[in-house]
Length: 459
View: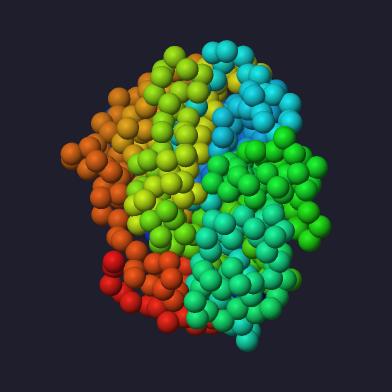
């Protein structure tokens, strides 16, 4: 399928779709073997009360797959990808039963927005999936797609702060020796809504490229009140779209030529579009494959204080600076915000459904993460998540043998198998080398821009 084919760009990749169907068929057939009595009880129980949630579009492709899966057990889960900020707002207002957010409640925001003040003891965080925030782009040379673009963090920041304006800028050429690049205006595509994707991206820029980001914030009138923000401050020439799907949709259309936007990796895969490989602190350009994300998040600092309202939330500073060659710097987790009290529209009968749904995706659902463009949770976070589920009012507690979840990260010695088996990047991914000839993301075909790399050997 051509990269800029309108109407076809955002269909799920056939290979991903077939793998997801195969996994679902196997789970349906062997559910009792994997989970024992819990799966039997779920499949036989018609009394689940429908529940609803809202929030992250970054995690939406995974959530949507899981909620489709559990219809076979009689569960009806509604989910609206309205952005992490709106998901948290609806949870606070009691209009949804759960929220999904890429960042915690902003009780002390640094960007000038109003504080979010959830009642103490009314909620808990549970990591649900890992993945990477990527820069999906639409660039052609002679009518053929460039699919092997590489960018340093400094250049990414300059693009999204209006410093670098053309695709053939010398700083982009320096990241891509030998790659043919057109003299075309760059169109940065950002989120128009309150977004966890924006928060993760701006958090990285504020931490790793502080001078550039602070200068930009001053330029757009937000000096001293920018830092990490869920609401991207825009300049003339930028395009703002709602949701990761909106950003990906704009980039993928014919009129998106020259555009680059930030989305979860899954959207680029589904759209059959490339993503820019990002330079890490080891001097290699990488993309967020499930294995690379698993490696990267070994450096995430997880709050392990069970008495803290921020229990299980993440600090990513060490991920940004990891010197493992496989590291993808913009790797992170997304969270479900669970109710711990009957409140708003949430009832104990809904807690039974929410608990069963959560048990499903924390165990069986993690198997599907790689085929959907995400990375599954490691064993320590799955175990912690199962403990969080027990706190939901009305939950029917399940005794799950975690070893039977068939999570790709699990290994007998307790280490992260995906991280242990992650391949190292090729020599052509090294800074200073000509880019690899193969494409990235959802467009792995050879690039029209050329390049002299392409060695299959790892370095």
